[in-house]
Image (cartoon, rainbow, N blue to C red; front, side, top):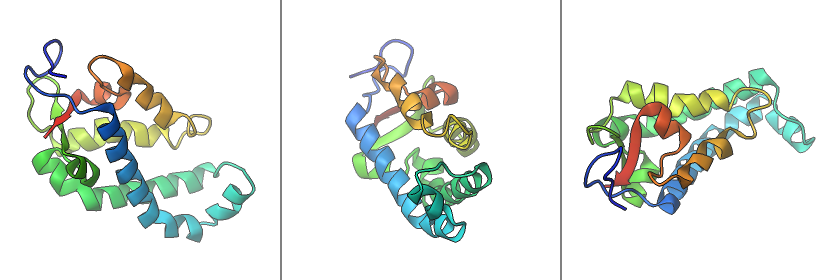
Length: 156
């Protein structure tokens, strides 16, 4: 699909499936690399018991995930608007108005930070990511974090 209204003219939007796969890749990679933090904090005992992680543990695990994500992706997000998953799938993040790569602080604080923060809130934790991605069914394929961040995901 090519944007004509409310977006970057001529920009070919990334498919929903490529966005989902890139996000899943990034999330699983970060989770896998921060898994030792979960183990160290005793989080497995809560998960085995079918209980949610206590807020302080969830916050620490989320912080570890964020740190891993940033170590792996900050440079390419800053220079190309791509995480490892987005680079692998041939898509990138752009400003919805200008088509340029948004600033790293805008990407981290508004686009990603919004969802990371939601994911630490008790009662919202389990629905934060599905809620975010429900919005992707819109014609402009913008998830909630894209709307908050003023971004689009397009083919690279």
